[in-house]
Image (cartoon, rainbow, N blue to C red; front, side, top):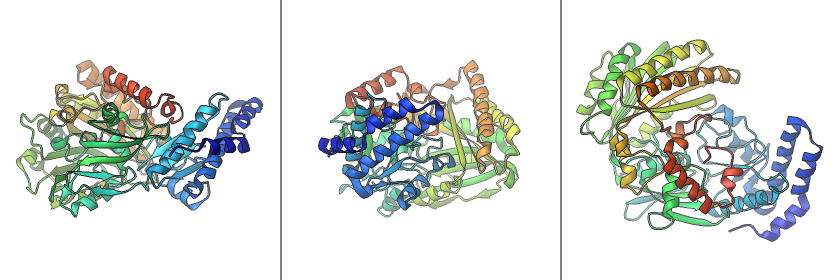
Length: 519
């Protein structure tokens, strides 16, 4: 349902949004005045939403507002104070909110005002303003949390507000699986539209490659479905297109039979790093890739736990213990800890959650390289060197993670109708690298960020000179200073821009939704 024009006109007349914003700009001076003007505009937008949507709109210092704005993964986002929160419980709510905000923004643009807004599902992207907005409107999709398997058990319809643990608990009980996120609390919507890595990726591709249908609220408030037969260009664009094309309110994923499988974490001393790196390159370069094997090879530093260590996640997505594909890793000694076992996806996702605590400063930064031992060894060395200036930061946790991105994964995009990522079987075997850090004191953010970004600056320069740097930057790991969509390649960027102009002709999601990575 689009908002009533009559309601909007009355609301605009009562609140004088355009004139108030214009007056604020005329009288205001300096940065503080600009901030005040933005806050005033946000407040007016929220009042109009309140008239139309009632209790679905929560204002500061109320329980639903505090619950939403305080539930982000990073402290940087928890510190942001939007003017109000739209707690959507249905597609209709999203239609109404987006329709009103778009209309107000299109009216307001002529006087320099408008309604900036943000959309969040799980809120796991760490950089400030990625899925929330200071003095604007947050649309919270958390309550869009249905999980409905099809009767034929070939697909499942999922609300984007679900966390992956909710999906796995439902499907594990039915003996079913989906290619989904690996950390329990990560949201379905953002991970899927950003690409999505999964333990099942060698079997089915990125999470987005398994989407059979999206339901999307466009900037106009219209609801459309996008699949292989209808709005196909929107369907493929959303597979990596993030928040640039509309608000996804339903995702239909392929389902497959899945029993318990073998997995867990093995911890080693950092002295084994040379063996680990060599084993990683061999695993990633298998001539015939074992599609059941999934790996995260991590090098962590935690001063409170004695410094550097290696922690590997091994998952073999059938019930076979110690399969040959992991022998080179599992034969490395000594092993300080092992949780290897036969269990289900819910259990493994919960285990992964234990290494990603909420309520702290957080940063991610990513790059992609060819599967080259010298390149990733240099990255490991740069991660260690760049850590030194911040090694005494209170309770700092610092981690380099390497993930295989072989052709066994990247081939699925083309097989399943195309995506926006720019990765193909012809890309060769790649390495997805992430350095993440977390810390408790906000004053340490600048120093930690400088150190972490510096590690990649040097590692990327080395790789570029060697010819092993790939342009792909995984959007869900990208820092705010990175350009992951540009890394999809000129052809895919052109397709995304064309889809954006077709489905959002007034460019609402480019101009009035500043969070995320724009086209």
